[in-house]
Image 1 (cartoon, rainbow, N blue to C red):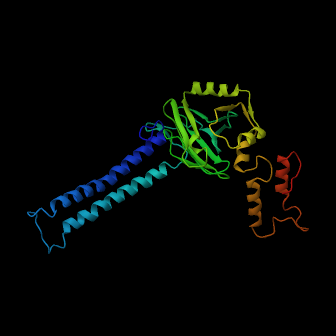
Image 2 (image 1 turned 180 degrees about the horizontal axis):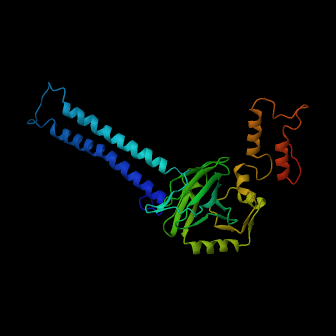
Image 3 (image 1 turned 60 degrees about the horizontal axis):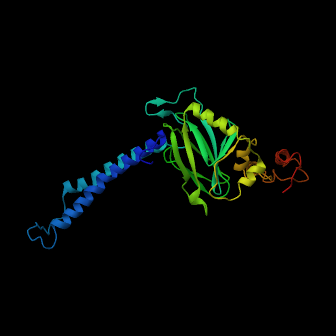
Length: 314
């Protein structure tokens, strides 16, 4: 999969691996050959080999020893620097493949990815659906992944699509990619995350536009909705989960997962906003006191909205 990918990002990463390997082999192979040659030529039993005990310098040899590796390091550094910026997973795609730029009227497909114990949850906010251990996308359409996790760190990896990107609780990473060939591809976690790690796999389906629309309708016809209560049950550790489909998703569920407040309580975004307000000019600006009773009103208001008007003090 790594050397025969079906996505443009993975293809360009493969090319970078091949170029970097070939450049390094330009040094490694001659060194190995010369080491074996010198060991054979100047072995103890080779009495006819030339021997010059007073030799201590050769300008030509010094230039070859230092100039060749230096030039290769410069070339390797240039190729790597350019490629790593072009292949930045956070950078929106500018091309479908080598011969086709991304059309101006094409909007990327947004997929929100949640690494769980020990399964994958995929949310499609524009389509209002969700799946477990099943991912699908249309061929030749850019995909914008937003990635997070529920408990421990994982790594989202579809080798045929693009490189590995970490998934971390309370944080969001991103990946922009495109699949160029129809097919079914392997996806998995590439970072050890506990007992069920080895079975934390899913199928990625590269579909035509028509087949992708049909797939969406199939998911919507499943009849099951992903509410916050359903999500909390799904979030319990489990292994070898079968594919599950959800015809609807609770509004803002991904943001609640990201901010670690699906079950209620203060969201991380509110906590950070309160911390920022404390750090401006007055260290006590965000603390509710007899003279500053309105300091925490925005936080209480947001908590009240999430709890049907009931303010929950932590």
